[in-house]
Every structure is written in structure tokens, then in C-alpha cells.
Amino acid sequence: MYDPKSTKAEEFIDHEEILETIAYAQRVKDDRNAVDSILSKAREQKGLNHREASVLLACDDPEKVREIFDLAYQIKQEFYGNRIVLFAPLYLSNYCVNGCRYCPYHYGSGMARKKLTQEEIYAETVALQDMGHKRLAVESGEDPVNNPIEYILESLGTIYGVKHKNGAIRRVNVNIAGTTVENYRKLRDAGIGTYILFQETYHKAGYEQLHPKGPKHNYAYHTEAMDRAMDGGIDDVGLGVLFGLENYAYEFAGQLMHAEHLEALHGVGPHTISVPRVKPAQGVDPGSFEGGISDELFEKLAACIRIAVPYTGMIISTREGRKVREKMLRSGVSQISGASRTSVGGYAEGGDVNGAEPDDDTRQFEVSDTRTLDEVIRWLIDSGYVPSFCTACYREGRTGDRFMELCKRKQILNCCHPNALMTLKEYLVDYASSPTRDAGDKLIARELDHIPKEKVRDLVRKNLVNIEHGQRDFRL
Image (cartoon, rainbow, N blue to C red; front, side):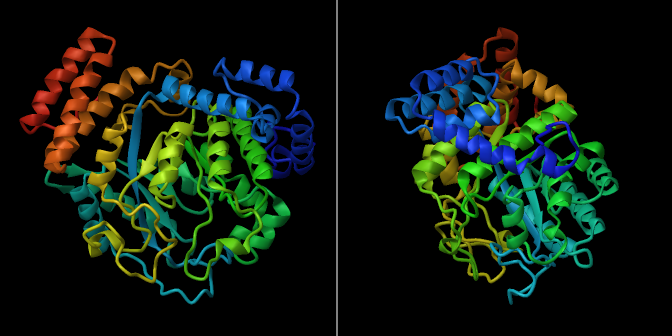
């Protein structure tokens, strides 16, 4: 029986409830009165439950679909404004003992194995800082011998310790396998940002088939990891399914039930929700899975997530190309990666002049958006967005329920918008090409007028001058 307050995976992600939700959505999707009622509730911008949101996902009335997309964009603007947060993944090791069928890291795949030394991690961090990145997502395969928690902790210390020119990594999110409460406490004490763990699929039978070997085969242990992370003192967690593996409607409902569970049990929903799709990789053909979805459906999934969970940060990576990412920004995405490398050691090795990753047999998946970070920044500016490298909330203690309280009251923008402008200015002065700097300075001049409080506006103006004169790391 579905129980969002239960600590058991099969009760807060209840299979029968998901099936009934899908059937209900199919029955109701053509009832315009019912759809209008759900949209009316959604316009209050307090979210929807998994059944209500599933009806919107199933609805194929063109007029209502347009309303869904328009509302998703409106909600994103109300909660997060026109800023887009930038980050990059950093792959530490591709050693892995799991048998995940969709990942080339899986045990026995024949992939060349590589694990970065601390000296190599230092070099990777320098290369990322030289691009202008301030926020990373650390990635590693699951291997208790080659990638124990001590290695992850040491690596975090190395990353945070690199101060190169004006560069510094100010926040490191961590995407590693589910672990123990004790280990989550260690990650918290190491100063991580968000703990990220993709569910891949909420369909238990499908999950077990996709993970035939290794610790990840244990569906309950994996699905309950976020609860252990929060019990270990990690305030912010990030969810995600890998769309394309199983039925998208099932995954959508399951993910929203997981968000409802975190709210019900811990009082804090997911800080982020990522929306990746299966992509080509060494030995991995996306067409071999039955859950493939079109670009249009992918964008609608994102829009419905934004409507259902308005407070969450939504992430799309360079798995997707420019055109899809452009549309996803209007569907509610608020964070994107830029100039990513998915190989172990890919940043220090460099790439070609167009930003493409060097040939490497340690890549987890092929990158579709191969633009440089400067090109991505210029694209966002030209599209009317404010690129942000802000990490202030984590460093000022605005995490967990404190962040959510501000975000749900739409007050976080009072901090985020000024911080975005100041971190963008840092990027423009230290790393940008001349055309990007010119465009960025014009954007900042326009955006200053959107800061409502005169005292804050004057402070930001003063700090922008100080940044020009060499000072760094201002934050509200």
C-alpha cells in the first residue's frame, strides 16, 4: 500500500499505485474540466501530486499542452528568474563492480580502467578553473577496493584545496553509489553540496534486470539511499531517472512519489531533479531499450516536473545537444553543464579547438553539446539568460529547509540574482573572450535595474567595481 511516510522503498514507491495512476491519467486526460481544474491548482505554484501531474503528462490536447509549457516557464521565472547555473562533471574513476546494462563502466565490459591520482585530480581542477568553473559534480564508479569512501574524501580535499590564479572550486556536489549513514556523515563533514543519486528506473522488476550484478542490484538499498543521506546530515539531495530505459509515465509518477516521500518524511523535497536520457556509449545502444522517447515528449516531461515540483532546481547535461537544451530552458530547466568531459582525466588532456573531447576509451557516454564554456556563456547571454556561477547559499548556510522556505516563498531571488551578476562579472573579467565580455557587461548593466532594493543594488554596483580591481568572492 502506498505510504509516502514509510521508510520502505516498496511502500513509498508503490507499484500498484503507479499502475493505477497511469490508468487514471488515461481516463481523465480528455476531460477538459478535469484538466482545467488541475491547471488552475498548478497556477497557485504550490505543486501537484503524482496523480494530478500524470494527467497533465498524458493530456494531448494541443491547446492544453501549450498552457502546460507556458505555465512551466512562468513557474521557473517566478522561482528562479532568468538565471541559469553552470557546472561541470569531474570523473575520478571508472572502476566499477556493478553490471548496469546501460553503462559502459559495468563490470566485465572490457573498457580500459582508470583512476585519477591526487596529482591528476589537482591538474583536472586547475584545468576546470582555467575555464572559469566554480561548481563541480564529482562522479565515480562503485568499487569498494579502488574507490573507497576514503578516496572520495581525499579527492574532495584536493579539489577544494586548489587555488589557481583567481580560480577556486567553491562547491562540489557528489554523485556516487548509495552508501551508509556513517559515510554520508563523512561526506557532509567534507563540505559537499548536493548528494546526487540517479534512480535510473523506479520499476523494481526492470531495475533488477538492468542491474544483474553488484551491490546496485539491491533495489531497496539504492532507493532508500536518500533517506540515509538525510539521516547522515546531508541537507540537499538530487533525484534523477534515466529516461529511455523503461516506460516514461511509470518513471515520471515514481519520481514524483519519491519527491513526495522526502517531503513527508524529512520536510524537505529534492534540491534538484536531473533529466538525462540514455545516450550512445561504448557497448551501449539506446535503441536496445524499449523506453525511448522523442524530443517533444522529453521536453513535456521536463515541463510537467517543473509544474509538479516548482521549488526544485532542474538539471540538463551535455548528454543533450544545443537545440534540445535550448527548448528545455523554456520547459523549466535552471541548471546546465558546460564544456563537459565524461572521460577520466579528460580536462587536463584538453580537446580540439571546437571543444570536442579527445578520443578516450574511458568515456561514460558521448557528449552531444561540445561547445566551449565561453560559447555556452555567450549563447545564454544572447538568449536573455544570466549565466550564474553562484555557490553562496551553501556557503551561507541556506540549505535544506532554510533554502526551501525561501524558495517556496519566492524570496531566494533576492540573493540569487545579485550573486549571479557578481559571479558572472568574475567570469567576464578572468576568462571570457572579448565579445563575450562585451555582451556580458551589457547584460549586467540591464539586469542591475531588476534588483528591487536600492541598498542591494548600490552594494552590487560597488562590488562589480571591486571585481574589476581584482577582488573576488562577494556574496549575499
